[in-house]
Length: 452
Image: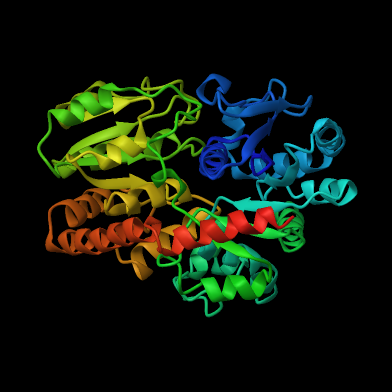
């Protein structure tokens, strides 16, 4: 008899779907049957996962939703608060139906939802089903979010301090100005969401992290104290298997064929993920910074990433020519393969956790342009704790961009970052081997699930 069935429920955004489906593959390899619960919005490509069962539930909240609105973090928070209210009943009915149809030979062991979907705790309480949550961010950024009420109380989020370079004693790696960006939206809506997420996480039976102990060992004891439930650091998820086909956007394979024609360690890879948006002025500064650096670059310009534009039409002719001399522009790239390519030498990123982790796994130093949420904390850890990259402090300014590229790609400072990144890459390989920290944590997670 198998080990039973697990119900997994991802938040339907690219950066959350990927790790959840990777986790599903990991747990399936350990003998569990997998059912993915999903909505019609951003539904996964079922044909890529014939070994899973998929179950959708009806919801109208996101029907016809304009995904370009998600480039505004305020809209993301408001949307998350909304779905946590209106999805309760249809999700409850879906899980109840699955439980009633389960068999003795294939019992449902537990639900594993994205921790952001905090309403699921109320559902599992009603149905007497264990719930283990997946947190798709870093431990260090989750600690900052957990500290939000204290930071608010201490006055760090006042408008007068919004550009202060002063350190924050409660989270020493951050500057006061970082907090302004991390929490730069309607505080009331954010406060409601964070309190609910933290409460829902503490009420869970366990907590799964897409990270590994050696990377975040300085914050792990604090997290275990803040969330006194079993914590399982079993990441990096994507290193258990070859890249899984869970991208919601079509990947342009010319990115790889173009890289094949470049010299080893010669190309800067630029991508700001699936949600970030910039204005035309910032876009032009990026372009001139790249062109003036005199370095080769592969640039992902996602359709809609430039506010008010479809794709590349804002480019003045002269600037497009300057960029075309050294760069290759695609709409979306197979990122894990790009970072693993021998031609890639640096990653200019928004510092979402998936991107940060993927860069670490391939030993590629970073240039960081964080925008909101966990990105600020990830970027500071890249620069100040792991010392494997630089943060662009002044937004998009061509001179600073050019200088940062040369510091990381050409100068001695960059070579030292590369050496430190290589050490982290080696720790990734070690943690996944038999007896390694993530290997042991995964074994503990499997045994924990089987105890239900």
